[in-house]
Length: 415
Image (cartoon, rainbow, N blue to C red; front, side, top):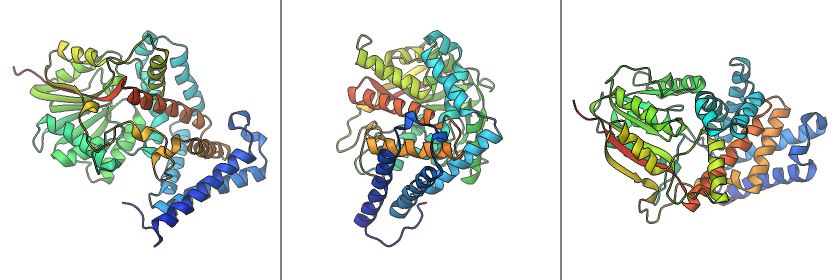
């Protein structure tokens, strides 16, 4: 729940927060050399004192004005940075360089053969930023008229869960569960018992912490594993779902075949897939740049067309009962899924980070955190990767060449 805020008019709160943010941005723009050209060692103690103070003022100002507790979330992220470095021995700078090399110096075949390293490295680097800036459900949703962000995310999850047709107490599998936001929401919605699988061990740890905190430890469980080789016996689950996760597979037939194997006869698999649409033109340099940014910024070995994933689902033996791009669903008075990735000067929106000022503030914050040894070296590189991915997704949405919500519902034939 949001923390209480002082009794102050909304206009005054917004004005106060905006003044603080602009002041901090102007300080970093006018007083420091361009960020890529300096190193922490080049700054004097007064530089660091002023930069630290401006960072604290930004976060405190937003806490005071909005009550959404960015300060608390930022402190939690800093704490996790420390845990990753000291307990998990994660060297962010080296890992992000290796990840970038996989995309810049390797072929598609090389990335597909190294998909476990690629995807694990991506989520080791990106999970903290996702939770800090997006929440516990790592996926998109369109917004129906009057919905806020959390309502849209849950409604999107509930719709997919409803397609499974499971009863309370059913055994359900979440393929590519992240830190378990959808798993917990769907467990409460359906009263099913849900296991989630992810390749990344930090996500397993974090997901089970959040399961326990939500009082769902007996109903939800995150485990580590590869969805190309699911660690479950045949015919184990009454229903299976995947939300924007199987796009990481090197071959869709591989992951869909494993899902078919562990699903009980007559059971339903429902998913939202990331796909290129038929509007994508491989001969267009602009379209190729969109595709490349999405792949690099989101840990994908390669991307598939909508018709290719539908064919793959049928080829492994599913009876496909529904298949369509949910992004094309009529939505009068609503907002498309990609709008949260476009710039806005509303300082209480995650869209603020995509503005020039927001980017400056984000880069400055990470620069200060790295310089004060509160964030590992390379954190700013991770942010640059994620911003490029966000730009690719936004451009893919506006051009209609990419969708993150291609719905497929398949039933395993009864024996």
